[in-house]
Image (tube, rainbow, N blue to C red; front, top):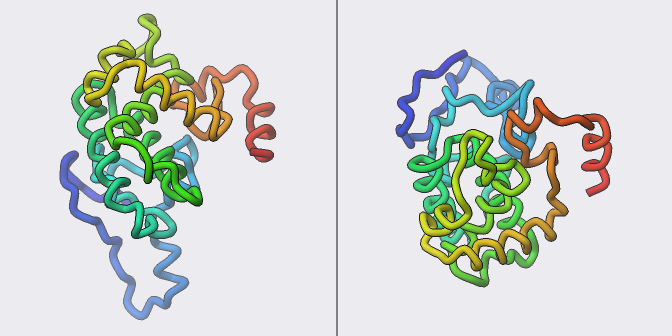
Length: 200
């Protein structure tokens, strides 16, 4: 079923409730979560349900973001939302939210320390590095300096956070957890990376 949602409509979309449906039936109707699908082919969270740039708090995660980290999670998400909407695209935003969720659920969460704009820049820079966002021959394209500037930090700050994040999650080129569709399609070693991520 396709739900008609305007691109910037941030309201939560509920699926229709079947008459007499039990709890299991209702759960079966729910859209797949980003955590389950990683927004990759064959089951991605549909744009029709989420909208192109929903607020971070509107993503249908399988469990709520911890209360203690929620304000910073939403603030970082809003920075990424604005930057991706105005200068990159929705695919980078969705991947950014997935990475932000992983950071929020770590114990203790590293998001509790440092500035929110630095984390937003670090997340997008980490994704940009492994997906060739800074390569002039690729689309979308943006410079490291411009990306950092749009997030409100210096390029050195964004690069430092990016390295911290990439080391934390062992991120690399063609990583199926955080690759764009273009990178998935061009992956020369899909089976190898699929097996590798099972051990991360």
